[in-house]
Amino acid sequence: MSDKVIESKQYLHLVFGGRLKDVQGVEFADCDDLDIVGVYPSYAEAHQAWEEKARASIDDAEMRYFIVHIHRLLEPED
Image (tube, rainbow, N blue to C red; front, side, top):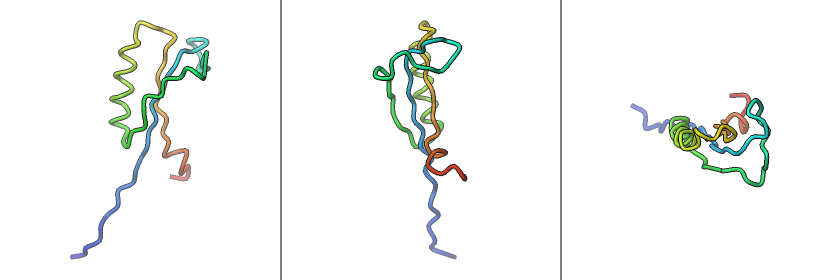
């Protein structure tokens, strides 16, 4: 049996949000006022953080939160 260690790949995700100029688009009203929630090592953790923020701002139609797949930006061929 091999003592090879299988390295798991890190899939970073950024959760952030802010007030939109128009609820139909994705342009922010003030980029200096973005809420950077955090960077997470898995989609599941990012989704949980996103969901908490989205639920907390559900009554504010102009507030929107997003998950960005940072790993896709760092290694687009994957």
